[in-house]
Length: 453
Image (cartoon, rainbow, N blue to C red; front, side):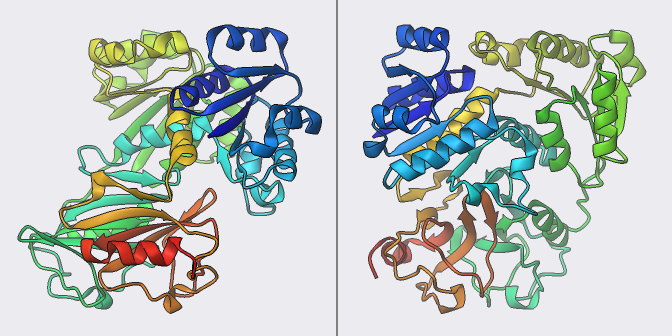
């Protein structure tokens, strides 16, 4: 599989190396002669020095025969233009643009992804924030999965004997349309949920949907097991911190940010009214003591300075913070992640580069049908299926789609957006759908979505 990458920075060169090891034929374009020379000496990939958004350069790189095009420079506009030019020159090309500025991720006025015809926007900072938010939003929960950057969440929950939902069918429950009950396990038997499925005490449910909608449904399934206030302190007003603040917008999260730059403090305070922003340096033990770090549930060091992150995590851990999370930016420290986690008592360590590779590989290497084994149970499977352009399901509303018995469509992924679809929603070419399927219906639904109608 031929993949062209533009940009040999830390993320670009790391992804280039990983894709090459996975069998991709990689061509890397870098405008800096120094950067191009470094990668050429260190990696077994084809390296070209020049402008990755130039049509002639892309033609020389073999864009006509490429399967993937990934632009990972530090400049968003270069990445968008490069992907647009590549799209004009390539055939059946999957394009990825690294995007840093939240402006291009806001689709309220202009859909920049559609405007520049880019298949996937990659935001390493957002990916890190999603990883950090998993533990904060659901400490100790089992089988928590996230799809489409945290937009779709999967949770397992048990029906409490005190739940008022016992004896009701799913049709009667008035469930939030942004979520689905996908699977029900009772007495060791798991089945795909149906509209007439009723709940009994002790049932294990696998629920899919918007995180807030899923959390609200959990309170109905497990009454009395309320989630208390979670106190979170972030060190650094970085893009990772900003993304994490958005993911923790629920009132039960009390978030404070410590930021040493006064101008950055002002920007954070104006962007997030009601957010507590402390101007100070968290490497100071005195400041951490004044901020009562010993009583917080989560302390997250997410500045761009790894040394500061490591020092503050050490301090926070020794002062008694319940959980400490660390962001590592530099490749020099990545080999020490496991050692840091053990020696420092850090609950989780994340790296923008590693998070980017993990996400990107899912898109570049994934097959048309992927079984999500971590969420599959016995004879019931959770499948992610790419809808073929020739499929009979394309342009059909879900209400008109004749899914086999024992099959439930629980999520629809389109570009960077994901949702729990309703009966009026249509399947479009290029969509990926998430399905809970009984083993007996597996092949029939795969044929429906992937083969010519």
